[in-house]
Image (cartoon, rainbow, N blue to C red):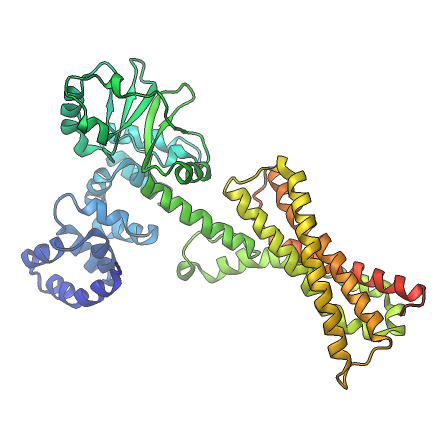
Length: 463
C-alpha cells in the first residue's frame, strides 16, 4: 500500500488543525491512520508542527510511529519534543528499536536519554548496546514468551495470555530449562490445539534453530531465508536464551546489506545515509577514493601501449580493435565477479570450493569465449568493408582478434571468479571494489594478451 498519497491529501487538514489548536479533532484524525501513514504525514510537516501532532497521537501508538521515521528525522523530533517527552517516548519503544535509535544519536543525547529510562529499561538497553556493532545481539529483543517443559498446556496458555501482550511475537514459544538454557521452540498452533492436560514436554521434538548473540547480522539474514521463520531465538556462549530476533528486524538488515553491497560493487564506499540526505563532501569522499585507485591502476595501460609502440606503428590497424578487446575482458570479468560475490553472500559456496569454481568457470568461459571470438571474426570482416578501415589479410586479422578474445574471456572468468574468493579467504568483504578492480585488471592484462597474440602472428608472417 502506497502511503505517500495519503500523507499528501491529509497534510493541509492536519496542518490547519495544528495551527488553529483544534487538538481534539487532531487526535481523532490521527487515530484513524496506520502508523506508517502517520510517519509519512509527520515527514510532510514542519518539525515544530510534527512535534505538536506527535503529542496527540493515541496512547500506545507514538513509539510505533516513531520507529518508522529515519534516524535524521527521529533526532529532529526528539530535539523538538524536549528531553522529558523524548525520554517517555524512548521508554515506550521496544528494546531493539530503542537501541537502533540510540546508535544513531550523538553521544551526549544518547547519555541523557539512557539516564531518563527506568532502571530495568536502562539495564536491558545497555546489555544490548554492549554487543559489537552488526551482531545479532544488537538486533534482539528480550520481549518474548518462555515456558518450562514440565508445565501443562493449560498453564502455558495462561502464562501466554498474561505476558504475551508485551512480547514481540507469540507465534513462537520458547522452552527453557531450570538454568535458562534453550531446549526447544514450539509454534503456537500445536499448543492451541493440544489437550490442556498435556505437558509441554509432549509437544517438544528437541529440534530447534537458534542464533548466537555474537553472530554477524548477515548470518542471521541467511538463516531466516533458509528456514523461512518469523522469529528465531538468540543464545549466549553457554546456550542460555537471551533474546529473540524477528523477521521485520531482519528485513531491515537485509535491505541495508543489499544496498551496501550494490554500492561497493559499483566502486564506492557505502553511504551512511540515504542518497538525498548525503552531503556533497560525503559523496565526493565515498566515491573519489576508489576512483582514484582505479585511475592509477588504469594508467598501466599507457605503459603496455608504450612497450608495443614500434610494432603498433608497423600495424596501425591493430589499434582499431583495442576498445573491443578492453570492453570484452572488462565485461566478462565483472560478470564473473558479480556472480561469485552474490553466491558468497547467499552462502551457496565458500572459498574452499575454489577448485569446483575454477572448473565451472573455465568450461563456461571457453564456451562464451568461442562464441564471442566467432562474433569478433565476423566484426573484423564487416568493418574491413567500410572505407575507413582497411586491414591487410582481413581473415588473419579476424583470427588474431578472435583468438585474443577467446584467451581474454577465459582469463577474465578465472580472475573474476577467484578474486572474490581470495578476498573472502583473507576476511575482507568480497563486494569491496571487486567488480571495478577486476574490470581494471582486465583492461591491462587483456591488452597484453591481445598485443602478445598479434606480435606472435606477426613474427611468423601471418599478419
